[in-house]
Structures are given as structure tokens and as C-alpha cells.
Amino acid sequence: MQLILHLTIFRGDTISRSCKKAGQKFKLDLRLVMIQDDENTVDSCTGEMAKKATVKKIYKDKLKSTIASKCHLNTFIKQVPYIRAQDVPLIKMPIIQVAGFSGKLSVISFSKNY
Image 1 (cartoon, rainbow, N blue to C red):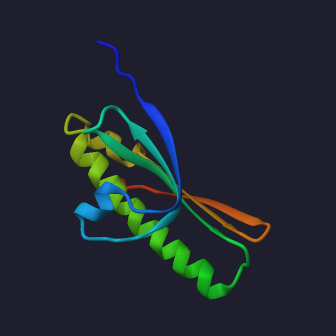
Image 2 (image 1 turned 180 degrees about the vertical axis):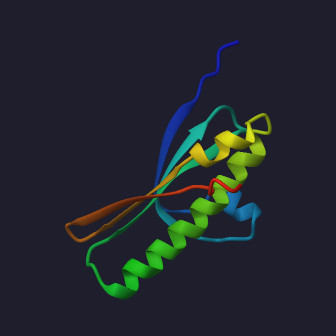
């Protein structure tokens, strides 16, 4: 059996399925989505872009991306029930944040005490 995944880029204020199901209506500037078929989609990376780096914008975007990424991580864990408990902390969801000419890459994951 061959598993084929496609990577799709969504840009410009889009909301993911997993966030909608969780009642979160975060519009993200960038989403990288892995698609196996129409039923199985997983957001694998989120991103926020801003022309200018203001403190309020940076913290607001970081909070929005972190909450959305946590939602995506929870959805991924539910969609992969055969994953071993010791492997769960190895899953990382990247978060990209660009403001002006500066950028930051962070990740969210479960702790080892999961």
C-alpha cells in the first residue's frame, strides 16, 4: 500500500477545518496543509505576516498562531491513533512569524510527560 500526501499552501486569511471544529475562528495568513484525501487533511505549519513590527501585532499574531497550532496538533494526534505514546513528543508543529524584515520560526509540541 502506498501512502501519497500532497502539500498545499493556503495564504491570505484562511481558517482551518480543525480550528472550525474546535470553535476557533482564527484567520491565518499562511497555512501549509498535508492532504491525503478529501477527508484527511492536517495543517502542518502556520504563519503570520505583518508589514510593520509593532509589539501589539507581534504578540497578537504569536498568540493566534500558537492556539491554532495547538488545535492542529490535537487534531493530528486524534487522526493517528496508532502512534506510540513515547513518539508523541517528537511531533513538532512549526510556526512562522514575519514582521517587517524580521522573521522568527518556533515550534509547538507536547511535553515528554504526555
